[in-house]
Image (tube, rainbow, N blue to C red; front, side, top):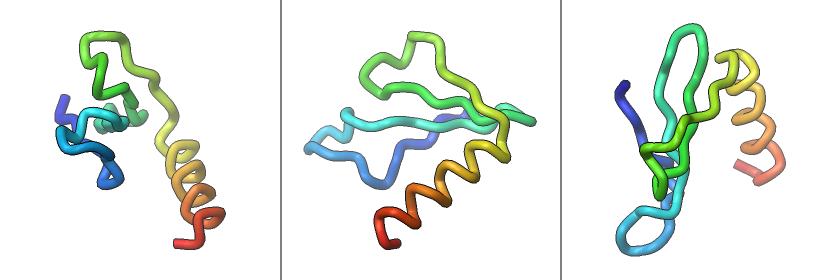
Length: 60
């Protein structure tokens, strides 16, 4: 899987964020501080709806 870190990573090391990876037809999400733990997976449309909602409530 190709993991991508959030662009909102905090801290100098960028190790306090979530990472996502496509796992068609799902999206995998993991904690960057614990990359060996099992990721959560969500149906791609549900993940897209979550991201859209978060952008709407944050004013982006």
